[in-house]
Image 1 (cartoon, rainbow, N blue to C red):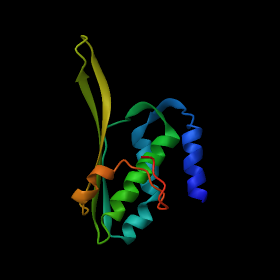
Image 2: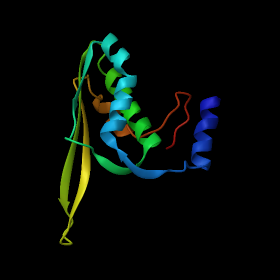
Image 3: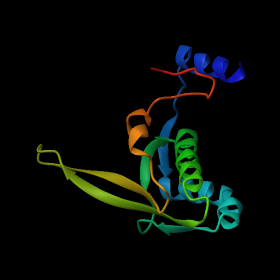
Image 4: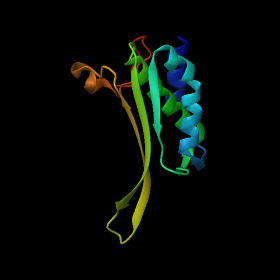
Length: 136
């Protein structure tokens, strides 16, 4: 019931974002540190391949931490027998066709886990609390 109420409140009252300049590498470091003990117990190596220097972006720090946290949890769950999680950040330039290049930061999470079963691929963006409540 608690999860159902939380999901309803999230839909009824969207979160407020606090977009400010943040170092994505620093946020990733914090989140990785939270998972250090668990990854060691599972025999999962977390390999950081970060852009040299800082990777500054205008983001909501707490929301990004939650996103990174969820991705790492999913990766660890996909590797119950151990493995490797590689996290990369890269500064990229994109030609917008407007005589200016836009820079963005690409973040990759690459794991050696089992992957998503083919019959579940269509449902990866469906929110469910396990009690049958779905955003669809």
